[in-house]
Image 1 (tube, rainbow, N blue to C red):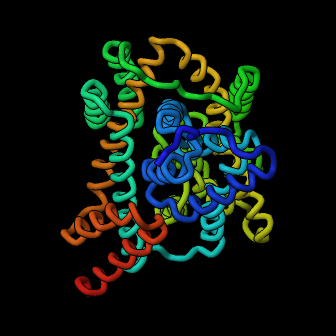
Image 2 (tube, one colour):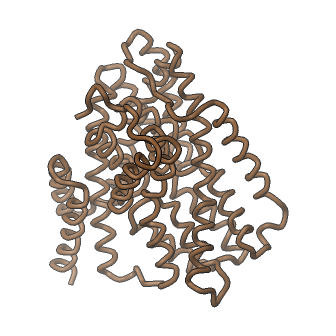
Image 3 (cartoon, one colour):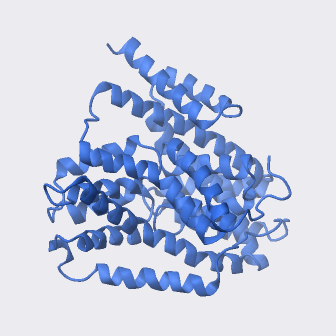
Length: 410
């Protein structure tokens, strides 16, 4: 349970970064299910278990990152790390959360194992059920804190309804705008408590970060980059996708396919094989770029050279989103000091709950819950999350899916 001291900075420098890295590495090893599920894991780890950040600040950071291009869950973790331990903490948060899946995707590109057999499908299904339970608990927990009265509960429902009705990559930003508008109308006289804290980022650093994003984006648009076969050319293509995508990891995949497959960097079958692998590993889907880099390396390259291409592509796809999050944070802090903006932010916080609830319904529940046994396993996992760590729930759900495959599908 969050205490009054929630959100206070931790130890700075490398000591603080080591603390952040240890926590985020654990999340990177166990956070299955895509960006929405990751926010559920984060809420449990950062808000409820460790009180690194208050529920209001966490919802504010989630709302901010949902409106920016780039991988929202990685941006949220990056900003929480910044709050906790400064710039070293931000880097440690990104590295810890990203490293496990990046290594797995690079290894998959090198070893090229098959993910098409029945057992692999069962494991993937178990991970989807895990995500359903984690997100459901996050929605429940956040709704109790951020929608405590009728106006905010109504804005949460509005956010969810808009997200479901609009669909596509712009559904979440539109839902958050609706929440902000509703907040300015309904919540000006409601006590919102302290506004979001943008500790860790100055306006000067923010402007520099946004300027760097724009400069690198212009460089990535240099004519003829698709036809080049250098590591920097691949980095430019991947960076462009990371800078322009709204809607998270699933949306970046079509952009990458349009840049990489027609120009011959990867053939369609290898591209789709990497996409399948990205669904089965923990951590951010943007680590698909690690697979792209290792696969696109010249034929006959050593493991070390393929790993270098992988690391370059991985850095390129994450860089614009993380820089934009850093650049937007000072503006978010400034807005929180004004009454009308505070009401709008409270409306956005409520709408975030609705957006997560909408994502819980579609695509998570509609994809993960396909049999009566899935309903029972997901419900049990939801309740057991109150007592057990997420890794234990992952084991339970995967074991149940494998058992169901063995018993009923032979």
